[in-house]
Structure formats: C-alpha cells, structure tokens
Length: 204
Image (cartoon, rainbow, N blue to C red; front, top):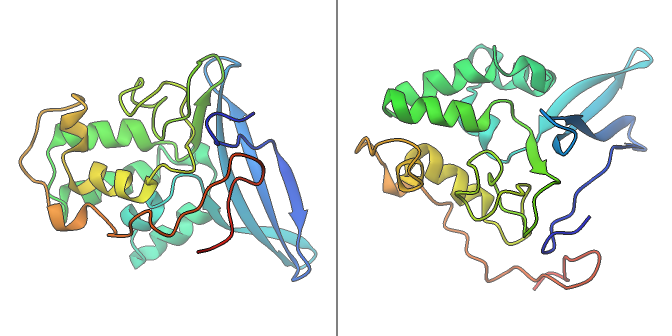
C-alpha cells in the first residue's frame, strides 16, 4: 500500500549470506485497522538465531537508552511488549536528566513513543505522516507511518529537546528547550525521490 510514497511493509524474512537474518514484523493494534511494525536483525549462534538489533522509529533507542548498564543492548534484544518496562524507564530517566524536561512533557513522550513500533491506521485516508497516529493527526495526518520526505530525525529531536510537544498542544511549554540539539543539520538537498517503485532515486 502506498500513501504519498510511503511503503507499508508486510512481514518477511531474508537470510543473509553472512549467517544473519533480518525481518520485518507487525502486530495488530486495538482494532484490525491499526498495526505496529518494527524490524529486527539476528545472528546465528549454536544453530539458532539470536536477535541483536531492533528498530522501528529512528533515534528512539539511540537517544534514550545509554550504553551504561547495557540499556541499549537490552532494548535491541527485547520485543515491543517489553518496552513498557524497559524503554519507558529509559525515557523517564533521560527526560528528567540530562534533558531536564517537565513531568507533563515526559509523560507525553512516553505515551507517544512506547512501544517503539511504527504505527499506521489503515482505516484513515490521506497521506502518511510520521507520528500521525500517535498524536491524533497533529503531525499532519492520522494515517501514521512515514513518508520518504519526513525528516524523522529532526522530528524526533524536536520532541526530545524542542517545543514540538507544546506546539502540538499536547503539554504546556516547560521552557526547557535546547535549540542546538533539535536538528542533525542535514538538509534535503541530497534526496532524490521518484514517483514509481523503488521511489528512491540515484544518489546525487
């Protein structure tokens, strides 16, 4: 299914020649129209595959889970159903210190980002919008997912260090923004999208 060049993936497994595997997974949401997606990477060990990485929304685990105490590794090897116990605590800790955000902003961030899955609502019309389902359409549409043109890194950094949450009306402005941390400063000049599959043009 394509929503303004946004590709919705169905589950698949690819076995790599290096003895590893990569998979895309999905779970049904509160209704059959809402699904959450994430990818995992596993490596072979003793005849079985062991998950070593998990990714759904870029930046989430990378920002909130520290290398100390193996927090990053624990989340990489966990399933989304474990995020309420693991990732939620990482977000709480990071948003309190060093980010220094308010309890209200922190609560919204946890509600939006836990569990760490890319959510889409197939009952909604319109274009894809990163965090659209989680925010009730505040980021541009209720379908969710992400468009190729969505700057998901800057959006995520804006949630953590900027005024994205208060601008969307999801929590009062806590005045604790750090503007220098709200962007990776990578613009769209090098991006080249096409109107047909595979949608990504040759590098420029």
